[in-house]
Length: 345
Image (cartoon, rainbow, N blue to C red; front, side, top):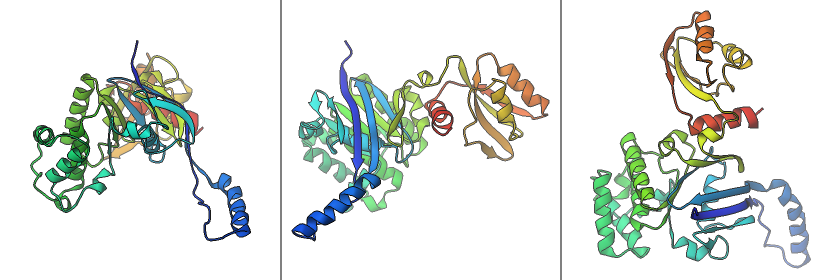
């Protein structure tokens, strides 16, 4: 039987931007608040809408979506930092509402914004050590882990104070703080923000290693390409609503879809419609066509067996094919399909 570490159902979260007034007293308070209560429903912010989620022990699970999709709100609910407006669930057997204090003790939570909580008068090393010891890690153990992660990430700025660190340096220090605590569940909220390619690769490597040892890891991101290396199951959010759940290849509407990346001398506006209407491609071209040095880089989702039809249509228009490459289905493919062809249509 699969061990479900995280299991939540129908999670919704509504924020009310109109707090009740406190200045009035007596009947005036009741009248003022009654008027405002009528306005609350019209102006409430729905961050999550009936979200279901289940994650197994040792799994790397992705929560993806654009900024404002509800990713951080969901992770905070799963951390015991926020109460849901509706729904229920457990994390490692602990109820997300009634056991929220105990929940905080089994989770390491790393956020892209956590560098703002670093003590700027301390060095990077002192920040990590203080954080670890405050959360109950023995000092000798903390120092050993700091040294190991410092070597792994090639950190040579432990002795620098926070103002002297770049954004990427502060981010990796925040990541190391969470790793040093070493709890059975790890939440990484936009962990790749500001990191260079070397640090992104190193972080991906350590995440895989930790999962192989049984640590359950949730990663939220709006940069989907950073997550494909894990080939994770994912929860896709759009304006607080679930639009996809599962592996990338499971989220496309039919089987036999193959992504191709092309470099073309041009990409006429009507070519997309012709390819779509003739059944060569299964969806519209995402609105992110990249043009560099008069070379058009475009990614298309083809139906199996239609690559020759694609090439013929392109050459018929006297367009030069500089490169064409078959690729694997990515989370970005699945997400853009859902948004461009199911949500925005």
